Length: 221
Image (cartoon, rainbow, N blue to C red; front, side):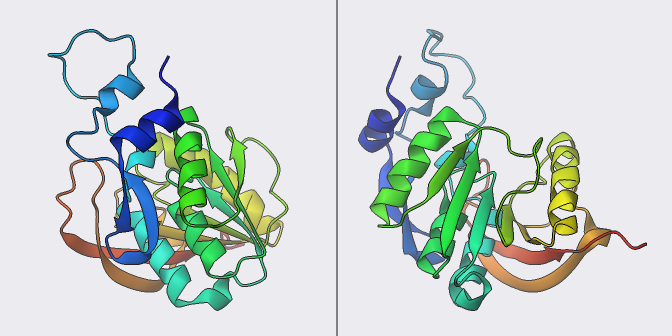
């Protein structure tokens, strides 16, 4: 089996993130050959490419949330922060750079965990990685949850909301970054800011598009 960290260092480019020159990430490119890492036993070279993994790209929701935090460091300064569904770790790295007291990044993908470690090291920040699904458990010991791109699919959003509601009940603030996907819980969101950032992940062409940061608010009553 391929070693994820060695593969990432050998086949992905460490480069500044579009719209976030303060942060460098190992990012996929057409020659990365991610299929070898995602499907190491698949010998069918003519098959369709797999869906690009979250951790290999800077998606718009994470990018806008990271940009917002870097521009307003007082939001995270001195706080314990959870980067939920961290992927590459972009949001958590931005929080650490902006002065967070401690950053925990939650990620379920073993390849994503490897990318997270490499990206944190490349940016000279300390991030504690929580490997696994934290949404089934109690609210974490943090003051702020940063959730970038966690509403990209209906089932994912439905799994996230009970956890995020438990966080709100525990007095933990929740900020959401998203380019306006269909499954956003819009009645529960308060717009805080908007940026033009590239959605370079997946089929995005890298053109800047409006993406927003929201505060998640408790259900009325």
